[in-house]
Image (cartoon, rainbow over all chains, first blue to last red; front, side, top):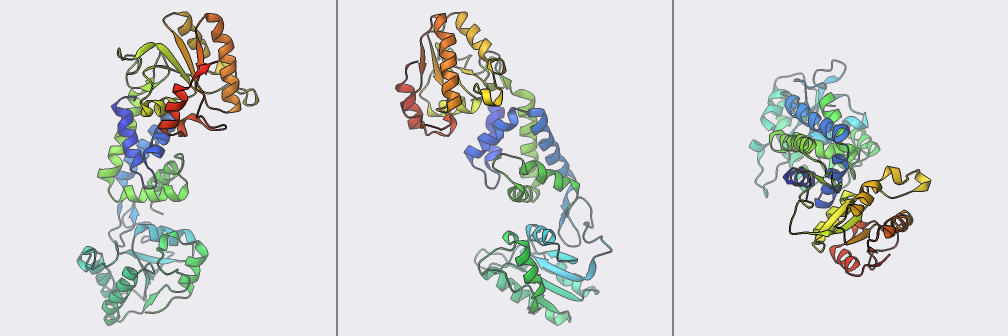
Length: 197
Length: 197
């Protein structure tokens, strides 16, 4: 049905999150009808992003600069560090435009059942950042899941002895929900109503 | 939020059919976390498909060979020509594995309201194929839409004087439906129950 090139393209498109074989075929067909306008720009964007984008060595955000644009921004409050599970959560908070501090991307949550311990997350670098000084508050913006709450509790126990105030986003995060699917208003309310952890 | 490379990638992914800004971000994030495993293979598949795939000069199917694998297959019945609106319809019929003749991709349907006339479709090449001889039946497999029915009627009027039997897929195509979203059983039934046009 059109040769191995088409089959391979459909197979890879079908693996995109939210896609399956049918939507993969549909996307492939749409693109094959305008290869120069649709396929080469996407191919070039993929190559360029794969070449340029790296995790920020300070916070773990994905950026083509290192330190990332957020860590390097002198207009942001460098004494505030907001801990998030993943870059998707960071993106969600940035879209809400309510937070002007820095971030720390944990890379997941503690999950004894899934065998994910502190050594699998960016915990050491977070503690080192706080020990290095200059951090006036750590905001834990983790999902309101069992693993998120466990992780927040565990991190609070590690951070408190370092003498830094630790807060948690609170009001507005629905129980069982992940942070990166919330609307901007809910995210803003949760940030404003943060309470001591 | 991560530099122009990420923004550009999200923007292009968001334009895929079925995708929007949210799913574009989700796909970009998933790929950026495994650039070598996810981004480069897709980039290469896009480049390779854009380079290799062309419309078949005989039937209009998309393939990396010309004539396409279907037109070049000696085991198929070269006296049968099935006229479809687009390559997606051809793919749907091939997945149903019930048709062993050749195809002719029309490239759309006549649509006076949208200003689409015979000169915008592959009508001339179809008539030339039939006039060239060797075609024992033309099967019109167009969608059961107003434009599809109009086109089938118009094509029948042009093909009949050439002395070739013209049939239409009939039973099982739901009114108002497009051909490439049907299940294989319905497609098979519609092919079997084709009637003189």
